[in-house]
Image (cartoon, rainbow, N blue to C red):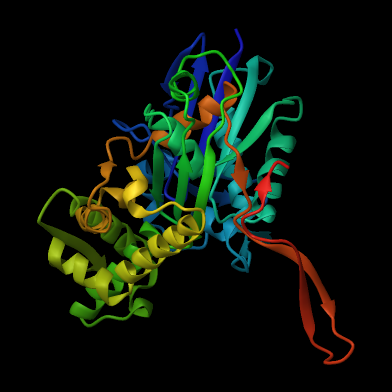
Length: 411
């Protein structure tokens, strides 16, 4: 039996979906998947930097290695791969480890845990952030070629486009905004689905045979901002309250950061939580309300950045004759999308639009599987491309734009 797989590698969590005989399910992998959830924590702990002995996923949490302050713990390493310049490599047991190295080893753990032999995989679809440059895509492709050299059918799709497919909106011609707010990036994609009712059902239906369905991408915006930033801001607020500095945490830094992450998650469903952490043997307990968290977000420019990204997407849309009142659905994915203040901000921005947030963790990976079945989108470039040259007159570097942002591809 041939299998189709999709992997949504996220900053905080990773999800793997599987399809065979028109049946789709989310895979849970022993030691990697979080019990009771459909996600794999994007964590890696290097036990031996020379032999590459390591622990990945939920096993890092189970062994409490996510509280380790040494440089052996890699978290949020996807962000270091996507952004430039990349963080400097770490020296572990005399060997340098970059975020790209950690990501490659993390994928090795994922692929080794799959319950299928590589020969039985018909196609693999990988996702990438809207704002990712070709360097990230090249790294992802290289990792797959090294670890699955005999698999010829590996495809890439941007995360927001995959989410548009995964939410299964079936209204012909609907203009849809995909709001993807995860651990490391905020990605917005505004797309228009096919006009034909027959094509729309086939385009978005999960189990239809492959056809040549397409939708139009109107605007894309990417920003390096996510849940990991909120964790850091919240930690700074907590330390301020107890009159401590980040340097004072020492080996307790990772544990305190994890406690802040847990408090952030809990405040999406609770009005108040107790945040407990230990520094140099002394226990601290801080009460945090949802209002406290929202004040931290406001102070750090979170809501201003959110509105700026929405305004930028709508400015691009208006150039193509699309306005806010034309948007039928806002589809929310990523853990930050669960925050009540984020949902409230979108409800204020889109007063006449249906907002859905019922599949924040699986829409992307399930949409990627639809790509494996043959669904596709007419896309456009979210970056401009050109040549840099040294001006003879000014002795300064200048640029000649060759392909402007917004150019449609494939041509």
